[in-house]
Length: 281
Image 1 (tube, rainbow, N blue to C red):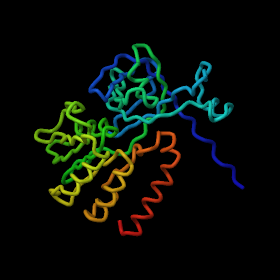
Image 2 (cartoon, rainbow, N blue to C red):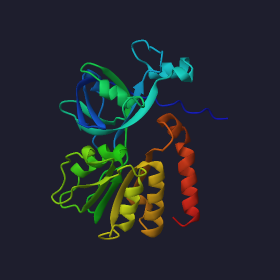
Image 3 (cartoon, helix red, strand yellow):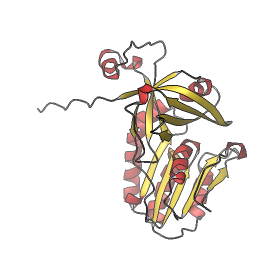
Image 4 (cartoon, helix red, strand yellow):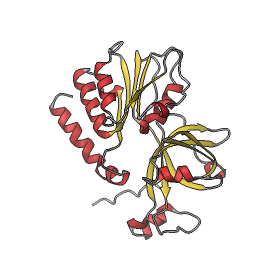
């Protein structure tokens, strides 16, 4: 039997908190900098993401931090806990990385960390990954998501090709969660206020009712997994959007924390694909 290839070593970046800002009651911004970002780069995609590394409860990892050694020598429960976040902005000259965190009080891990972060605090992470950016020459662009997808949608809106036709819909709880986003003239974000309704319901209704300017569309639809599943079916089966024009991903799933969702995400996606293949989607 051939030996399995060695796992490629991951580069761990170390950022220091430069400043933080409460953007809205439910969104907190953290800007990282420092020499630990010397090897980091981003910019090809607007949905770049990084995997943040938080120490497991009760675990202190020795310096220099060595993720490969930790995973090799320690039991899994003592590995760093990962959380995935979109790169809201990257300034290569200043070497400053901006991350926006959805915060629900004390719930979760990354949100409370961001809300309490102070200048000089250290955050380690790997990445970036990414796969989507607005394509020039496309007839029009459709961007859809909830709060978790807002940083990626905002980055995409700000990088739309000149003259692009854009429809962008972001579902948030209420008016207090709206943000100012630089956008092409006449092509801003439409905010959908949830107002206590189920997450994603307003987005699915809006896209179903939307008059498409043309079939020549590039779509970015990310956020709660159930919502993304419904939109995938609609866009493929009812709108006949080619697969290669779709960027669809469940960032999270109702009733699951990130650990539980990531553990089941591959199986979930495979099941969704199989169901929709059977239905011609």
